[in-house]
Image (cartoon, rainbow, N blue to C red; front, side, top):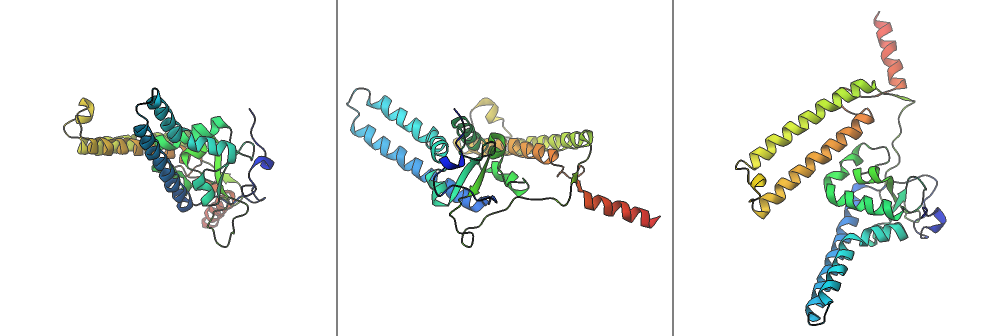
Amino acid sequence: MTDATLEDLPADAVQPSSARYATFTSRFRAVIFDSAIVCAGIVLIAIAADATDRIPGSGRVAWLLMFAAVFLYEPIFIWRRGATIGHARNHLVVVSQRSGGTPTLGQAFARYVLKVVLGLPSFVTMVFSRKHQAIHDWLSGTTVQLAANADAAIHEFHIERTEDDARILPSRRRRVIVLVGYLIALFLLYGMVFGALDPTGCARQQICSDGRRLVLRGISLSWITLSLAAVVAAWKGLLLGARGVGAKGERQIITAVLDDR
């Protein structure tokens, strides 16, 4: 199976020559709308299953339909159309970085699984990633962009972040050392917060209440997401202690030092 080309995308999804990347606000609206659709579908399936519970095999069919609603709705829409209903409503389209067209089914499914596992913290990297990608975009090789027919005067968007001249990164060794320091600090912070919220060790014994279990899982996912964000930031030279410097900035620093002499 090969990636679709730009000609295969819907008419309202073909991108202009200069990519316009989606904002967090528009993407969050799309998530809410798609979640409402999936929930409504599950409710309708449950009602239909209750009405047909005397028909042999109806329960199995209902479970399969629920599975499809939860796990296949977004991947199938993105694979076939480049956008879910929520995306289309907000004039967004998901684009494969490799082909510039719609993602493959494998890309779309991997992207969705990562999105579900990481949750909202996955969007943290939109703040500093060059193409405004969330972690699930970056790992699946996709971007979310404004559709070509969307009016730029009405819809908000970002352009690709650029750097002045060539960016000079710290040595790989320095970036790795600083990254390890950040990861250790995040782990210690995670352990302190987790311990404060679970002083009795109910998570280890699997006897926590549903509310506390949900909070503890959220803390764990946040720690994983922040750790992944730290890895991305270190690679791009954005962490304090190992920041990259633009070539122009580097020349200015050298000039200032020479002037002082």
